[in-house]
Amino acid sequence: MKKLIQFLLPVFIMVVSVSLLKAQTDTVRIQTSAVCKTCKRTIESDLSFEKGVKKSELDLDTKIVTVIYDSKKTSSEKIRLAITKSGYDADSLPKDPKAFRRLPDCCKNPELEKH
Image (cartoon, rainbow, N blue to C red; front, side, top):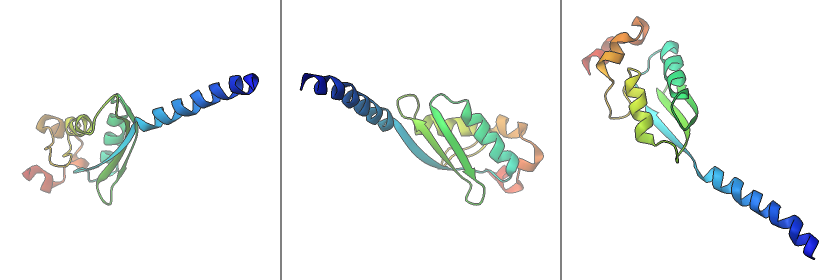
């Protein structure tokens, strides 16, 4: 019985640890002002450098970026702010004008300049 407990205790601790690690991961979907493949590359690349971001994927048809992140290291608001600093709108947050001016011409849809 003692050997069984010695074997099961580390397994139990490992299962609980993995469960706790998974609990830290969260997902957010953010509406952007992206318009082309260059926008997609820019947003996904910039987000890959954000602390806590595990994965990001922009759907150009919907202009929604889905971000999987560690909620202990960052927040959805910090992710939105990072997108604005890349030159794009992020939900209700407006893009940073200086960052927008640095974007390639293909990313500067004339409608976006009204914002």
